[in-house]
Amino acid sequence: MTAGARYESDRSDGASPLPPSVLVGLIGKGIQNSRTPFMHECEGARQGLRYVYKLLDTDMMGGTPPAIEDILAFARRFGFRGVNVTYPYKQAAIPHLDEMTADAAAVGAVNSVRFEDGRAIGHNTDMPAFAASFRQTLAGAPHDTVLQLGAGGGGAAVAAALLSSGVSALLIHDIDPARADQLAASLAATFDKARVSTVPSAAEASARADGIVNATPVGMASLPGTAIDIGLVRPDMWVADIVYFPLETELLRLARAKGCRVMNGRGMAVHQAALAFDYFTGLSADVSAMGRDFDALSGGS
View 1 (cartoon, rainbow, N blue to C red):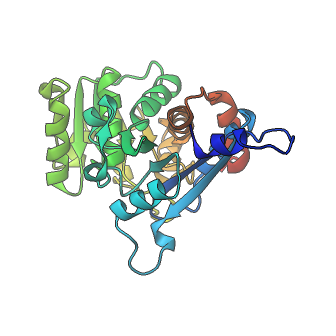
View 2 (tube, one colour):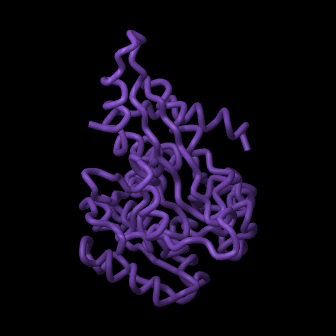
View 3 (spheres, rainbow, N blue to C red):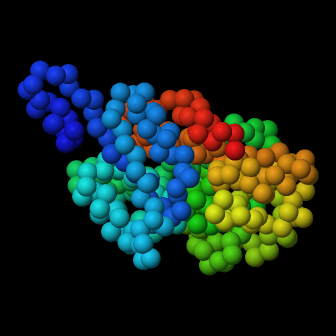
């Protein structure tokens, strides 16, 4: 029984019991523009919960922010039901968990941590969220060969989603070749290693790719630009970006101008938030309603 449930059942003043209380949060760097709190709190209200979602932004914690293990310990100690985890902590959080779900272990990154019976259990909702958005937005697009930019925590989930979605040849490029190699080796434990390779040159890889996915933070409002030379993008390609603030990144704007099919970060953001809500509460979120909440807050930007 949660602390909130104990408080509600112990009332003796004859007043109506309060709805269940849920405290969750998001750990990340530079996350003040996140739409996730709004989506979660609106869905919590629809489900009859007193649902509070807090930002634990290390950019707002002084010159030397606490280590990820200290932030997780704080959240557990102060009664959080769970936390989402975003850039740059999706892999750094893993050594400080008690357990991971099979999905998170397969991906090698976590974006949701639930605190249960004194244990911190890591999960990954990014992978199924990207896969769902990919199926909906780029249905019918050729995806035999895909170039993925970025091999961090978000990139690990995207890579697993692409391979699960039928990509035959996934080419991974990262500014840190060792990180790309590590991701490829990790994926080989779950998928056919012949389907995954690292590429030192985005130019060479793009020439044979059906589509490109930006799984780096480049393109965020706080990190503008493109992770690839737009001259390497062909009109017959599709281009996807996991960044959702802004929705129309520079990469997507330029690719759209070339005639490419594009996929922005909205679908992944909405689906991962809905799945995380399910994970934290045990209740099924209304994905369509959470999408409308996202759009209302985004104002189309």
